[in-house]
Image (cartoon, rainbow, N blue to C red; front, side, top):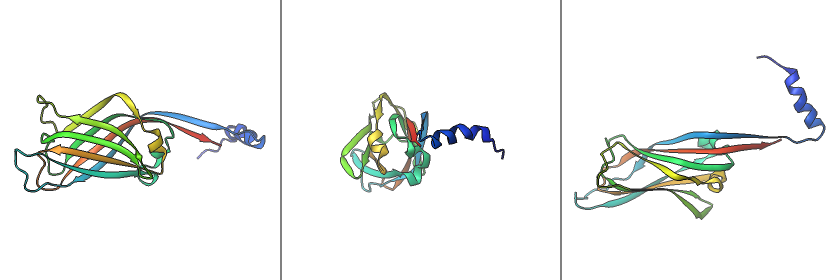
Length: 177
């Protein structure tokens, strides 16, 4: 480790003079994945009947460390829901919805994704949706916790199954000294 006192002198001089500094960093491509999100099975469904289920998870500074330090212009650009575990693909899903909520203020729910499968959709192992305009989630993301909920509908499996949910976002970190 090399100590370079010359690089520290301007900062020490600014602090000694009572000057405050601030640092900003724009982060343009952050990918956060929740792996193995458990979705409940729906026993007794028939091929002709649709069912719906929901599952949620929480982002906090404990499990997203530096990414939760984004505090300005936090925007979601893309969401991917990928098959994992026992399901090879998501062809049984007709609908998916992802929302973000601050649990201390549930009325602040923001819809991040609403997906309706088209008749011509392939049987891919994932659903990827890019937002036509990035969705601003700064107020929810800046809270202590952000709850992400996935709701799905279709001819769901009878046993529990899992998916991976990836959120691509950007934002700005600002620090005041």
